Image (cartoon, rainbow, N blue to C red; front, side, top):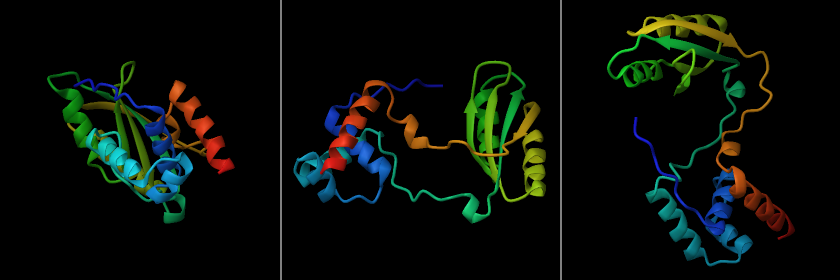
Length: 175
């Protein structure tokens, strides 16, 4: 597993990222107006953030429940230790339809698997496929009764960057 280095971002980069995280379709013109910089500066910074891998793409944020994916489950998976087991098992699990995230973790389990599906029967099928993956010793699956919070963008801005983004949000509301 290769460690990645944190990319150093200045306040302008953080403000651009926050605006794009809030609304991926916001125009560069609007970002430029709010931040009081040129449109070409916004364009160049976004392109640089993409080249550095900070921005991995622009996607529509879909509501899984409105698409019929009303079941959310979390499966804790223990794998059989061996050469490259984290990559091999992780990749195999990630190919199962309905699995939307796989995390290799340290502790009593090896993987946390996030699942979305349409029914109990579909969840049962996913769990069955998961347990048949070569190297999986056992799994323990939890069904989420209610989603209290689910916001991937929240985790992007932490610490000082988050504080700076909050200051920027207040400025944008005033604009």
